[in-house]
Image (tube, rainbow, N blue to C red; front, side, top):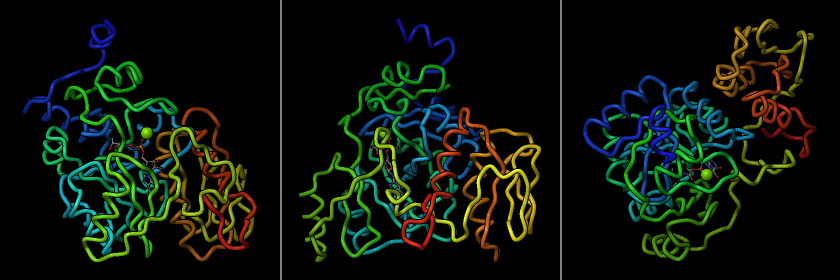
Amino acid sequence: MERAFFSIMIEISTISDASICSAVNRLREGNLVAFPTETVYGLGADATNASAVAEIFVAKQRPEFNPLISHVASVNAAFELGVETPIATSLANAFWPGPLTLILQRRAKCSVTLLATAGLDKIGIRVPAHNGTQLLLRAFGKPVAAPSANPSGQISPSTADHVIHGLGTNVGFVLDGGPCESGLESTIIDCTGQRARLLRPGGITREAVANALAAAGLDPKITIARALDDKTKPIAPGQLTSHYAPRATLRVAAQARRRGEEMIGFGKIHGAGKLQLNLSVSGNLIEAAANLFSMLHAADATSTKKIAIAPVPNTGLGEAINDRLHRAAAPRQDKGRNTI
Ligand code: TXA
Ligand code: MG
């Protein structure tokens, strides 16, 4: 009944050459596509298109910019985005394609927008095994950023009906591949340190990961950490220690530039300083979200010690933008860097 009602506004197609082709066209146009994987359904966008990625946060109503996993078709494509390490190589060989996400250092030439990685210098990558996902990723030819296709704070969807029930018309197109094989999200391992770090238990067990490391002659011990999810909102700036940390101090809700500042504008408040940046001249919050991290990085890369940023309304995506900005502007705990 629900599906029949929504099918007037949402295109719901079982996997076929024609539906993969429509999905690819939608991704190319910067639209969202929900698609099945062997774990849960994902809400996908072109990972290289910041505005398309911003739409994911709107559709899910994520209260902050939690980084998104980039999905690619092959191990080679994965290591074009992130830097290979011995831990990463051994786990990729053992479990990709499959329900495993690896956190790697972003390559300098990584094509994925900074918004998808929430401004971090690390990227989460997965090569899914699901036949339909593989067809989609191969036909699209670029990385697809996708969180689970559920509204923030709700359970991950394992059928197309769950997606429609949760997101309704916030998603325009659903590829229906039937129920997901596992219904449990991917295991996430941070491969950037000396030892593997488990950020989220999932489809692949800790024992299986340890065995694969040992088989490759690596240290099989795994450090346990906790990934952010839709329900764990970070409460203190220091909780996001791995998050993007501007070198300069940040002054938020600034009406005008003060001496020495690199000022990032929004709407009618102009940018000023060397770069004259503006998150969105027209005051569009999706555009502002799309520009946020790249502009902070750009301002931080100038020689300034101080960045100021114009007020951003706290509605819609503005809430997520302000959440990040306030954390970046909060007093430093380590006399070192701010965390964002
Ligand atoms: O099975 C899955 O992983 C599904 C399917 C669609 O692939 N995706 C999924 O995405 O569960 P999501 O967004 O619901 O959960 C991804 C988790 C979040 O906890 C996020 O914080 C973490 O991955 N994550 C993504 N990129 C990260 C990064 N660069 N550093 C640390 N954590 C990251
Ligand atoms: Mg999720």
